Amino acid sequence: MIVNEYNKLAPYYDFLARMVFGKRLLRAKLHFLHLLPEHAKICIIGGGTGHVLQQLLKNNPHTQIIYLEKSSKMIALARQKLNQNMLTQVRFVEGDVSNLAEEEKYDVIITNFFLDQFSERRLTILMKSLNSRLQAGGLWLFTDFVLTKRSKNYWWQFPLVKFMFAFFKLTVNIESNKLLEFNLFFQALGLEINNEQYFLKKLLVTRIYKRKSSK
Ligand SMILES: C[S@@+](CC[C@H](N)C(=O)[O-])C[C@H]1O[C@@H](n2cnc3c(N)ncnc32)[C@H](O)[C@@H]1O
Image 1 (cartoon, rainbow, N blue to C red):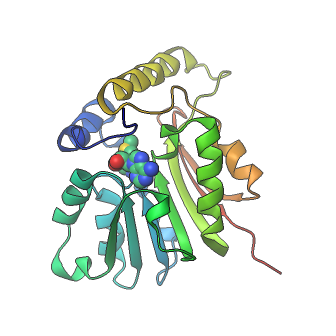
Image 2 (tube, rainbow, N blue to C red; image 1 turned 180 degrees about the horizontal axis):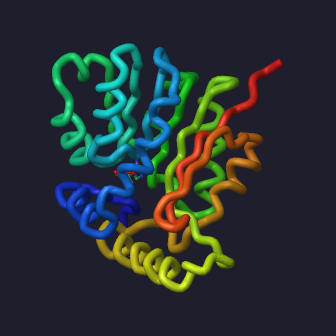
Image 3 (tube, rainbow, N blue to C red; image 1 turned 45 degrees about the vertical axis):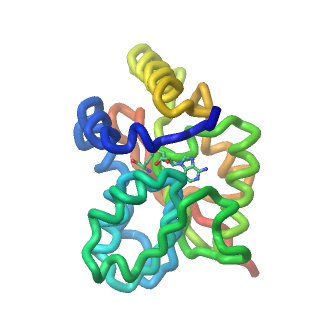
C-alpha cells in the first residue's frame, strides 16, 4: 500500500487542522517568512494546500518558487489560491525529491509538517539529499511538532501526538509511527539554528537553520 498518500484527505485537510489547532499551525508556519531573502530561489516541499506559498508570493514579487508536492489534489488546491501574476513565479512539481531537476540548488528550503512523515532511515536519506540541494549559506525553514519528556505538558501532548499518528495511519497510511528528534538530524548535517520560536506550550516549533557558507 502506498504511504503518505494525501489525495483523499486533501479537501478536508485545512478544516481538520483548524478544528484541532485553530490558527496556531498557520501562525507557526508564517512566523519567520519575513526573514527569507527577497530574491531567493525557494523550494517548498510537501507544501499541502498552499497557504504558505500564497503568503510568500503576496509579500514578495521577486521570489522564484519550486513547489514539490506528491499529491495532485494538494497541488490543485494550492494553485487555486494564486492569481495569474503569482502563478508565473511558481513551478509545480508533482512527485518526490527524485523529481526535482538534477543539480538544481536552492537558497531556501521549506518543510512544514513534512519531516514527521518518515521513518528514521528514510528521513536520514531524505534530509541528506535535500541538504545537498541547499546553497552554501542557504536557509532551511522548518516547522513541526516537538515532544519534550521533561515538559509539564507532556501528559496531554504525548496522547495528542499519538492520536495524530493513529489518525494519519488510518487516512494517509503515514510511514512513520512516532515523532523523531528532528534537531539531531539537522545537527548531523552540520546545519545551525539561526532563529527559533515555540508555540502551543512548546508543542510546535519553527526554526530557520543555516547551512554553513563555504570558505
Ligand atoms: C502533513 S501534510 C503538510 C502540508 C503542509 N506543509 C502544511 O503544513 O499544512 C504533508 C504533505 O506532504 C506531502 N508529501 C508526502 N510525502 C511526500 C514526498 N515524498 N514528497 C513531496 N511531498 C510529499 C503530502 O502530500 C502532504 O501534502
